[in-house]
Length: 423
Image (cartoon, rainbow, N blue to C red):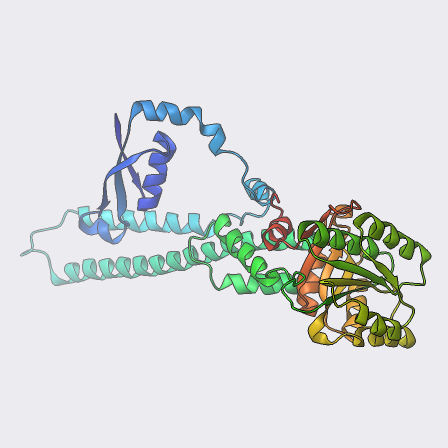
């Protein structure tokens, strides 16, 4: 067995020195605080002595697995940037100046203590008073220096935390999270940080904040006693029809639901034909309606179905007449018997998404589906639109394959991706 003693400014520092020397499997046999003696106690801080031990065989085994312990963690990009000192706070030159001042005061106190004096009877009162004044002056300077050092230490902790937060801020903005939302997250986490926060601790806090803000996915509710109508709305070219086919397949094959399809997108013959192909493969009915009144009549024939998925025309709803057509179509089904999903592409620019969601917000309340995640590595807009609209996130698609390439929103996966971690 190997037994060694280590001295540090703090107990943690002494233990770190022991671990660095002997390895992580050490046993701490004893710890004690070592206080300076005599007049020096006013000028020196206490130190800590740790007695550590480790079995020689265990130390050898630890050396053989050190590479495994050094594997890159989930948030590898952030860790690497920090390790390369890209965002580390600059060295504080004040620390060196204060250390020099402390040494000067220590030397002055040594001179005062070691100065050969005359016998007490012979030493006049003025000499004693001068020494006391000098000592008092040294003590006052030492107290002032200690207060300044304590203040500097707090500032260094703040600087370190700020460097970590700046690193996280940059990562989120690189993933195209809106700056105002990034600042909101950072401000919320700042108040929870301790004096010894590590990058891992701060990352964990930000990660949890993002997960909570995303929330649980809003999925299609199958636990109803009546036929549920699911409307899919959104602009042209986002993959709405393919998304409907994927959900129909998922509900029919995985959930064994009785599903029917309806399309009002009569402006695109290709969309109708595409749905017909999927309906034939799945063995489910497809009806084409040209007006809201036709859907109202069709409802009498669809009472036996669990779900009716309704494809709507993907057009610009800046046109008031087109907006009114959609409103009338939605009104054919009571709110309690319908759900509405706004389908958006993850590749669309944020300002365009803001405009699109604003237009549809004037028409109805909706849940969010994002498509084409396989075509971009920037997913910040999903988070942005969710926060902007308050609409729940539901499903995402990552490819054209039916019935695959669709999944429910995973808040933890999104949070990891936004922070540059491995999903």
